Length: 275
Image 1 (cartoon, rainbow, N blue to C red):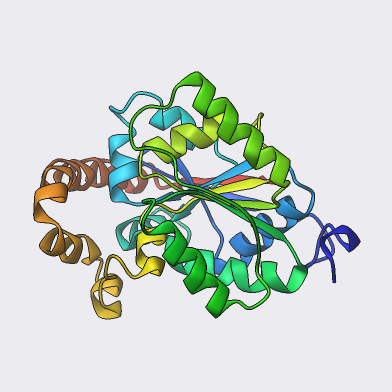
Image 2: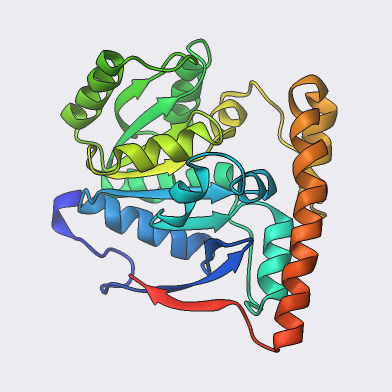
């Protein structure tokens, strides 16, 4: 089936989804299949959409990072990438909450996208690692249609450079654009470019490095225990210690206050669905 032959490939209908607000950030009450469905269906229509993949760091630091909260609040969909967020979703009333982990979401989406013949673009990654990522994905997904790959500089872009990258992405006409320039940069970039770039953008952060084999993922048992942050801190202490030293304690404090409010009020923090 080609992209032009269908607009709702999984359900044949436009499904809606509810959300749970964790520290004010709305997280979709969807599992992998539900998120993949939304991404692919939006991509098929080349709708101007973007998806945030949220962990404790991004959800917590949204409170003091200029532009990040607005980007997450206005995202078309946010996933619970970290297990503490999943636990919070369950405690706030979404009993069937499951993790939707960015690197795994990328692979599960690409598996469907390749079968659908969708056009795929990449924006982000280290210039030395991006070619390795593309090669690995081409081996894992024979026939993948990669139409553009851009590794922007780590510095702030000039208006001319930004306009050129935007032009290239639009010229490639991708259905899905994977964005890996790190938090909060990727969320703010997607928010600023949603109206300017056709297709659905998905911010997956470190997934580029994981799938390029440049950075090791935490063992599955640590991920299930919600200790992926500890593994990453062990591997990259100089780069990450400030992040976890600040955001983890703040998250715990704010989460406890939210839980107290939830149980004191006797209501769940579940919001009605949106398309």
